[in-house]
Length: 123
Length: 106
Image 1 (cartoon, each protein chain N blue to C red):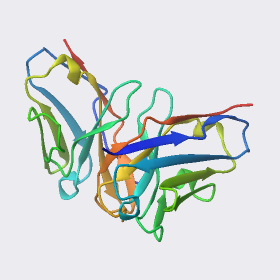
Image 2: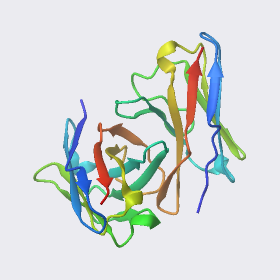
Image 3: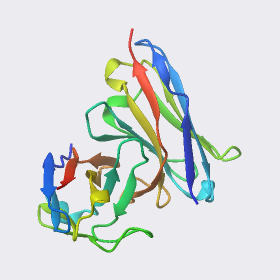
Image 4: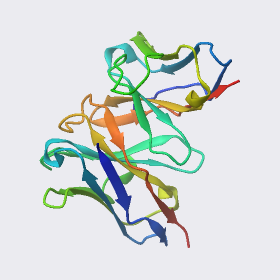
């Protein structure tokens, strides 16, 4: 079955950087889009970014554009989220999720999720 | 930006029917997906494209979408259905989630 395992979270000071990783297994990684979604304490889900199956298309929520970069490595079945210039409002549990399709950013559901990795931005 | 509105909480008696709404402008023209969130667990997709159930999701979960409201219905609610439920759509290459509804099974 599909398994997504996130790592890389931690406590970081404002303005610093962090890179999250998500290792995928149980499906043909190179055929599906991949997402990052976060949930701040006491808040609902907030979608962060998607990368298409081949890495050619990437879309971001406005609040992270220019600061976060999503990427993928098919040789490692891994999707990354490079987070720069971190702010207090980036504090959240970050989930990796698999797209049901190619990750075109139009209509697909997120059909499998990891357990998440916690990111805390604090001085 | 596109906004989705969900009630903060819904309560249902054990075995009765729960209805969770998701409001958005002309949401009936979009595909709506629903997710179940439980503390300490990975979120689970319970309905996709308005009314389709993924494998393993019980038949008591159903959905509809028309006009400005999408609806998730849980018929014969069980104790294990107590969770947060979030709706999601795509708008201009951005995934948008509703604020989430806490379902309490009494």
